Length: 231
Image (cartoon, rainbow, N blue to C red):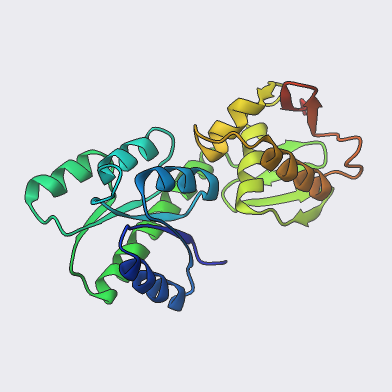
């Protein structure tokens, strides 16, 4: 299983470069943002597994970014800040941060806290998925607890975004989901790129459909969106 993608939100390039080197050395994929606005866009478009968030951003307080993310996602957010006052820590935790790491910090401590947050996130996902053991629609089967998908008995490899899209439809069979709804659910409220959605839908159909041009499962509602055919 590949390591998680981590979004670093930090306006000091030297710190970003240092953190990137440390995290990539541990096998993590890294993207970065140097402002609050860029961070919100990156969080929605990249759907990282974890966010390292500095509070002192040039265009806004990092807590605004945290509150925005918590409106639509439970991505683990670790606040990394030079502010060490108890009130700052409490405010961040109350706003939805998973952890607060004061600067300066050691590499070992940072990596341990990242691993801890990712493990907790994975346990939460497993518990949630276990509530619904599987979904079956004709030859399509989703094993939620294992995050496994098969089509006509053949295992299918989906990217994390493709899997989220498929599950979104599977949990609402027969319901037409608009382009805007899908974009917001998967990429966040600022997402507007319908081409990104079309590309992912084409990839999913190529992987699960015997004839992608005449899909059995996820059907196109022209000009509106998509729906999962009733099983």
